[in-house]
Length: 77
Image (tube, rainbow, N blue to C red; front, side, top):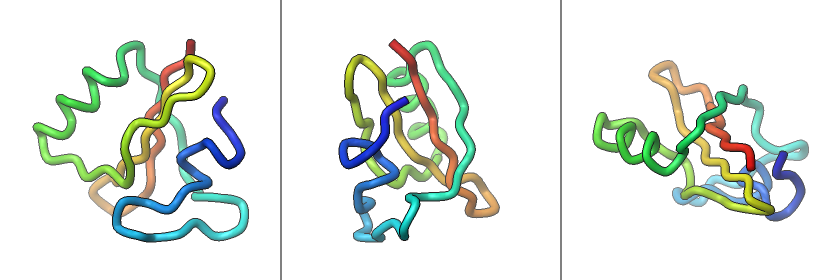
């Protein structure tokens, strides 16, 4: 997993929101082609909290579900 300062859960979001101690509470969904799936979700109006973060071949991005929960989309190496 991507963790620590390079991870999306450690960084401020595009709207300036800053995570509290421990990062963002969320659950994780895994994908095989994150960039393609994120593009489709954006086209469908899904709100993303940040851009795709890549570290060590792993990728992740945070989005918000309709009730407002943060969801991490993740692609392993």
